[in-house]
Image 1 (cartoon, rainbow, N blue to C red):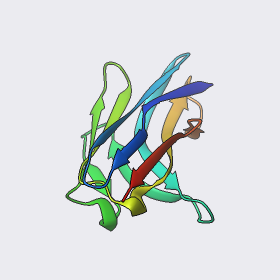
Image 2: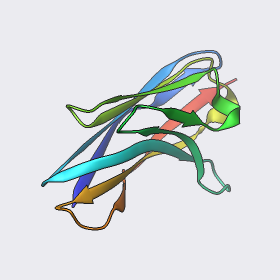
Image 3: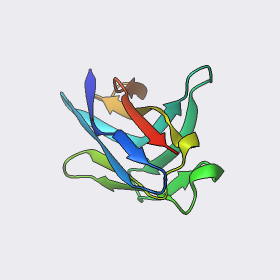
Length: 121
């Protein structure tokens, strides 16, 4: 099993910035990709950003392009989501997700517990 530990999040005013981090740990595993999803009250969980472990290429949902930046540390198996110019509509619980291969088995998804991001207007 792979555990994901998230940090960051909190309350910020519109236009402000926050940084989310997620660290993967566990027995022998290989990360394939990592990223973030978010879920606002009454809404479905949506993809926010993801990054390939092999080449570091990242992709984003249209609504955060130019404001959010996702980076990875392949030594520490962590990802960091830098969120700038935050808007009230970014308010949600943010979940880290990793696709990993454990002991050479079939790739599987692991999820973090979620961290609250609240942007006040």
